[in-house]
Length: 325
Image (cartoon, rainbow, N blue to C red; front, side):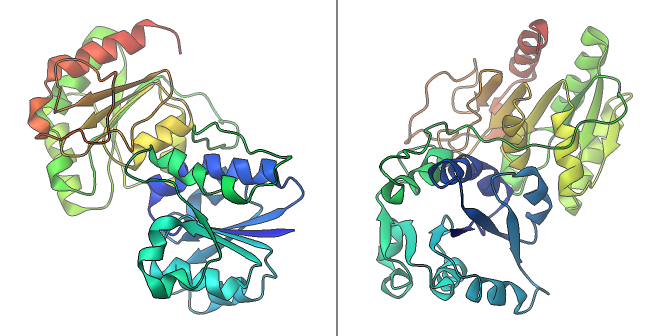
């Protein structure tokens, strides 16, 4: 059996699709699974063992990915993406069963590409659970897929030992999700003075992000700036950290996939759909900034990031570092 899975969105979406890919492999253990991704996320393919092959879409790829889809001889196609590109890929796959979310039916032309549907309500469940829900409607009844919605990535064993560090990742795709540079610097100073830990600050290629990181470096003594690393190098940096502190961005999902102790800072966005869910994850929301969130609701409103105080982040750091990993 040959199965095509399409996740043509961003890094976080790909990481949160890994529980669904595990469920596919459990339901059809003999299957050969190919995972279609965008070129910006393709570096993570080696860290996803549920997929045996990758098909990479994107600028400069030409017709190659479409030819791979068209000639693949697929039996099943799961579209986790729900856009025009993935709909065309699903149609070209000519798989006997092509599965999409019910929401795709609102686009009558796109809906023609599919013949099986998942009723999962995207606004009412965590994103990882939403992707996992796509598998259940067509899974064999005697092989019920697992319900574990925790994302997982697997990297080769670490090489030479490195001194313990805490990874700070202040950057994100939206300027309104940035925390203040001076507060990141205070956190880095606290890590050094109170815990004897160095702060590694990772940065992406965006000019605004790099300027923000430069502010942090100027205000804190002894921080190490890393960036912009490639995606697999960033994943490795995350996996080896003693603790990860980040805004609401892809690093939240990378840390969750390796179960690294982490603090995720949410401002204008609702953490209900994107929060890390393992036991060593602390979620701080600007909407309720005095203490970590313990209850999450689909309709929770956001607030400006500056409402999250340095003191609240430091309390969370001290609590996580006080217990063994």
